[in-house]
Amino acid sequence: MYAIAGVSGQTGAAVADALLAADEKIRVIVRRPEAGAVWAARGAEVAVADLADVAALSAALRGSAGAFLLNPPAYAVADPFAAAVRQGEVFAAAIAASSVPRVVVLSSIGAQHPSGSGIIQTTHSVEQALRATATPVAFLRAAYFVENWANVLPAVRSDGVLPSFLAPLERAFPMVAVADIGAAAAELLRGPAWQARRVVELAGPSEVTPAQVAAAFGQALGHPVSALAVPREQWSGILAAAGFSPRLIEAFVAMYDGILSGHVAAEPGNEHRRGRTPIEDSVRGLLG
Image (tube, rainbow, N blue to C red; front, side, top):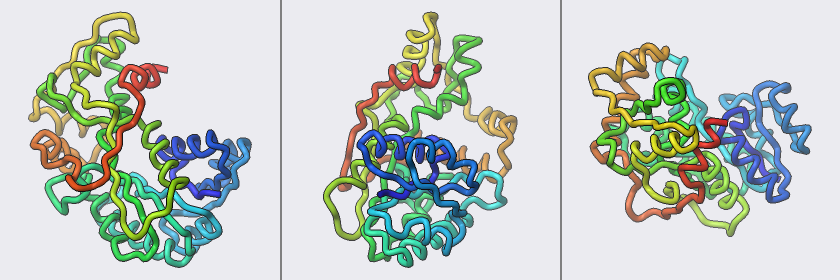
């Protein structure tokens, strides 16, 4: 039986789905009992625990064959970077107290850097907090989520335009579907044992350009969709209109700057894996 956090979000749910598809038993970790009802109906155990509570999280992990953990988005807090440091400390304490035999932690490409990566620095902090743990831990460093494009679906549908902070539009970037993250995490949990720290860099079947993403949307919708590069000077205003705080705006602008400069990239020397989901399938999934 495997313990899975984050099932109320896309990534944790994808891990849980992959394990259930492999006929594995799972225990979902949720903050509220009602959030576990849909999983209980599918045969999962439900553990109610706040990921910030060491004792509750330890109890949720105890007795499992492995666990999937992730730093939950902390966009509403004043300092998401400090929150990530605290979350890493909680994870380290709960892992030690629970004696869980292996853990997969969602991370990000670029997590090797202590600075220059914007919001991705939060994953660096979590990794650092777990470096000294005696438990085998695998950091699954995912590339840019294909699902991030869901944020611009209204413009895609109504205007036939795919606004992109990623440019040039013909430049290929590593991207990965959440389903492939779930599959990779499940494979690590079910696969051969490992010792100490492990870093797995995960991208999709191939790098993808924003122009190709737009073309995939156009094919799925049956009308042309064009990629549109959003000037950098407009980024802050767009993020502010989406409700981001000044601190978060700074963090996300820095992340995109890091991606475009090549600073945010997979680290050489680690394991590198490819997902199987082509961009066309991911886009159809986003459109529903």
